[in-house]
Image (spheres, helix red, strand yellow):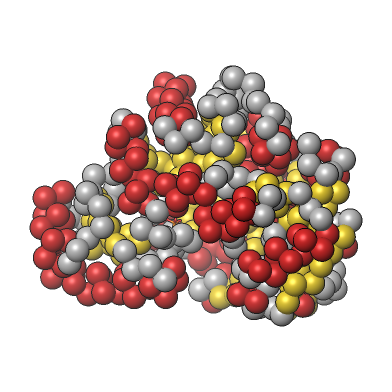
Length: 449
Ligand code: ADP
């Protein structure tokens, strides 16, 4: 087992990783930017190294500085969390060359899955169903229009390097193709320095259902069932739950088998997520794979009663996994609490938290790095807390979530709490009758208390 893990991240996930390391008897090193001096991950790690100014490029994305911190502290492994360098194959390669274990898959696996076009090609070869689309990157508008006509509108243009919902454009007719193509490319270039675009059928009103998988270093791959992440705004998740209200035991078997096949075809090592779109007829299509721990992993932890970060560390240390899949025995739901103003188009609302009280009680979990007096810096992601509730049934889980949301007090900044309270009252949501288009018709006035 590792002696000391450096956590190349910040916020709630850094704290989450520190917690498991402590329970496993592993020492921890936090790295932080000057904007995060007061952050809890700095306080709770055994050691902390300031690696630079606020800008991510100067700190959490700066590989030479992170490697210098590894050297000074003599850490023997790096946990990248999610975001930042978590899916950066170059970083995983530098770790390998420096003799430090990157807690995650190999650079080769990240490359195979990080590029969405390559990932789709790999899945087609393995026999996993994918969304019909271009057989690779689009060369130009003419080719794109031709393919769009052969698969039929609407189509979606997507960035091969995409993430965080960026570089995507829905196109409904030939005349709009060129403009969408240029704007998708521009956004992709700015966000990922890679303007490779592909096109696929736009699946109308689908569910986003993803499978958690774990693979070890000996070729074993299992799945830990699904999470439904259909409640999204601008292709970004707001609420996740497990099991999916749309799931049937038969569909879970089929999708779980496809997810395991997807992992096995690249000998996947580590925890990962296979994302699928599911249409109203319960046809499912591989969309992409995330080769890291996800924001919404606690939902799975709660329903299968297992620590996924511990699993990740054990696999990285060469410990084999048990051969069986895991199935939900409870219902769990996560609300992402962001420092955003829901009455102003979800505009970021950084600043000082004046008072903070988090909900407690049976079946309630809050993963957060903030506290009263903490200032949310404007430089990073706006998520400040995850509220996770667990109960025997979906109905009870929603009731518990309502109770917990009512107990949650965050003053000084605007948060997405009013949205979540309104969502829990929404009839379609309560009935489990929703898809990724849900927010298009959601009435934001319902958030007014
Ligand atoms: P990112 O990596 O940027 O998060 P994804 O490929 O995971 O991008 O897609 C994000 C979301 O965009 C999905 O959850 C879904 O709501 C929507 N989406 C992506 N591809 C399609 C598609 N072919 N048809 C319909 N919706 C899609």
